[in-house]
Image 1 (tube, one colour):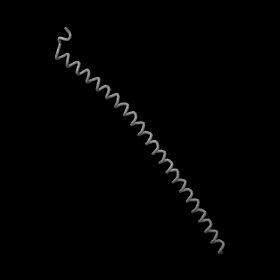
Image 2 (tube, rainbow, N blue to C red):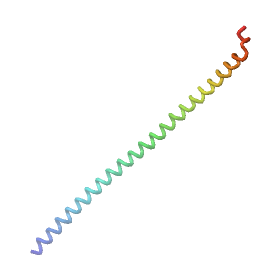
Image 3 (tube, helix red, strand yellow):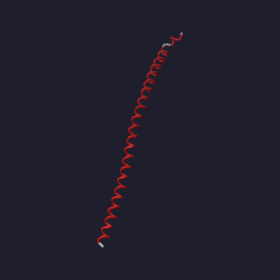
Image 4 (cartoon, helix red, strand yellow):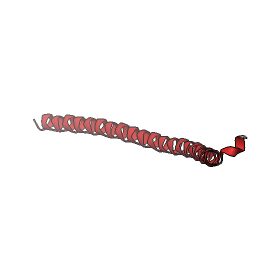
Length: 84
């Protein structure tokens, strides 16, 4: 009878070890996916910042051109003799 109880304990320990490995594998997969997501977000942020910086430079150039045009238009409207 003592042997049967020992066998049950061995089976229970085996089941517990198997469950522990499955839990560790699940946690490892979750951790890996979180790291991948974090890496993606870092890359996305860097790319987005770069694109926004380039867009900001283009907008600055356009704003400067618009200011130049506004000055030219205002000088022509205040002094129409330029066309005569």
